[in-house]
Length: 202
Image 1 (cartoon, rainbow, N blue to C red):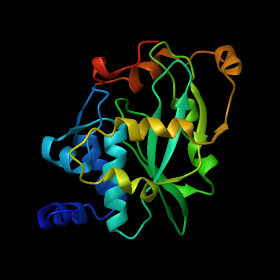
Image 2 (cartoon, one colour; image 1 turned 180 degrees about the vertical axis):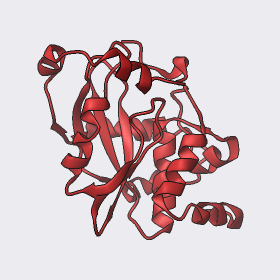
Image 3 (cartoon, rainbow, N blue to C red; image 1 turned 135 degrees about the vertical axis):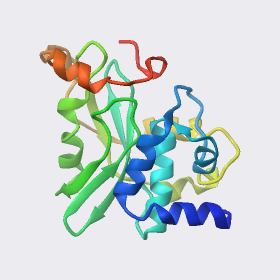
């Protein structure tokens, strides 16, 4: 489990804002392999799944369940959110290679409402809107056999297994292809500072 130093550090990330700031400061990892939060803290880099695991682990130490929502995209990268619920609603924390798919404040009445806040800003490098479906919150305790908090092993297969879970459709592929492209200004703002090696090549 956690070392005393790891637990102290994670407990210092004692608000969603602090967790999000930490994820924002991580160097983006363009590799497909997935490390546990222990190794993200050691290396200082991570992609969306790795950041999501770390956020879920930090939220867990605040008394939240370690929950993730899986986002499925058409002709684009999939994404995950670490989600949490407060008295005011659902919020999210997220590591992203873009500027617009990061965390959301906890003012959403449902997971669908939270997910839909991402829809206008979820598009590929050609500007095509791409968010197709989302999962219900996934309790990561069901994956404890992966030792996902501190494992030395590659957790990519754990993340890939999310594809086998039920998802709720937002828009069909056909519908998405008929939607207009986003404006150039929004496209530029979204990918400002992105690691080009980590972007889906649409």
